[in-house]
Length: 174
Image: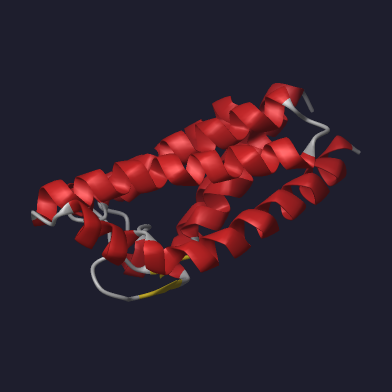
């Protein structure tokens, strides 16, 4: 099997994994706690910038056309236009940045960790700015609603994603 076909199959699998992980969510206010960000980090860490990003674009397109792949079984363009839409769009950049670091520093776990943290911060930026725009919420209030409560869980997901990415990449390389 060619490397390109293998990457395409993995891309489809990570799109599906994202749809599943997004359902593992807990409703807390307007922004649910979701395992989706773990899948995004894994997509970038395993697939690299091109296919990791593509897997998130496919996920968003599936949700945009109405399939219930977004957190809490939601789908449709209205979700993207709603308070959490910026975070969903931020997944594309999160996967790209993580994938870029994974490709640039393939043997350095610390740099992969830096890429995952950076990608997560960019996702926070997109999501929080969009949240502020849609809900007319002030900056500090939006941070307290949309970022601060998620920091501990996201830190755990980042470490888990880094360790899993390294393991999965070793398995795929065989």
